[in-house]
Image (tube, rainbow over the protein chains, first blue to last red):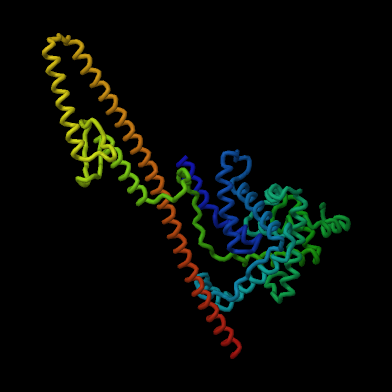
Amino acid sequence: MGGDLDSFNQLVLRWERPIYALAYRVIGREEDARDVAQETFLRAFRALKGFKGQAKFSSWLYRITLNLCRDWIRRERRTPLVQAPEGVDVIELAGEETPSETVEELVSRHELGRAVAKAMSQLPEEQRTAIILKEYHGLTFQEIADLLDCPLSTVKTRLYQGLTVLRKQLREAGVESTFGK
Amino acid sequence: MTGCTPAGRIDMCDSKELLVSFLYDEIDPVAKRDFQKHLSTCVECRDELAELGATRAQIATWTPPDADLGFRIIREAESPKRRWFQWSPAWGFAAAAVVLLSISAAIANLHISYGSEGLTVRTGWNHATETQPGVTAVDWKAKAQELDRRVLDLEQAQSQQSVVRTASASDLSEQRVREIVGQSETRQQRLVSARLAEMMREYDAQRRLDLVSIGQGMTRLQNSSGADLKQTKDLLQRYLVRTALEEKEEK
């Protein structure tokens, strides 16, 4: 059992950031997302014997996380609200700066992130979850359909509708697109 | 999805699923080629595709805040039996000392009395009677002397009767006494060993709990320090942002 524990902790180390990121983007609260991530691994460990490997381990973790997020949303009875930071952390951003990126561009990118967070928080849960799984976790349409227990076509529709709403909201927020035509 | 015929064009423009499949490049090669052909002639679909692509690039900028994670699953220490009071190492040592003293006293047959002669502590199994309340030291000495005398008389009488006692009877009695003493000692040793083992288990369990408690305390302390650091950092960050904004306004 000690070996099991060590092996599982290796998996925790590998997946804790993606799981935390998923929880944060779905429920939008840092501390609660941390709790959800922690509970995810605890539940996964307890149910490890029941995991037969019919799904990818990551998909299994994602499913547990999403269930916990749904529980959290029901329990809190409120729409997830992303806590956008008050200001720009210039010190942290400086570490991210690439040679081709000026400070203005860096700040602009950070502000864009805040605008996206706000727009995402206003999406319906189904659309938001589909976009998060696709954009930030790179799941295929089929994997998302399996996770959300819905047809493939529904996943594509949710993605299309979600992206369309986001595009509109970002435009209204004054975020100019540098791509396109 | 057969090309740019009017009917095909309408289908493709209406099929948002196809657009999304193309956008994420999760589309079979034939459908992809057909849609590319469609895009070359349909400005609306091309624009929409570009807009959605731009939106995808924008939402990629959203990153969660850094969090101190480092989760680890640990096995819970074996929980000891609940007691009406909380054990601590000091309690354990004190209890162990009391139990050892009691056992030693029992083995040594310790007698403690307090009378007119003051405090009397006596050990061993040789004394025949216990001190009775109200019996003075003088009375006790007299009685002891009388008893000794009677025993002496009895021994003399026995020797005078020339009774031949068989060696076997004498040996049997001695052997029986040894057996009883041996059994008693074995029983005492078992009791002491069992009690000591139980005490060691309790002490070990308590030690583990204390270590866990200390670990949790250290974690809380570290978290607290982290929170202070974060608060300081946030304040600095706000100051920097405010300064940056003021400079921007001045410009």
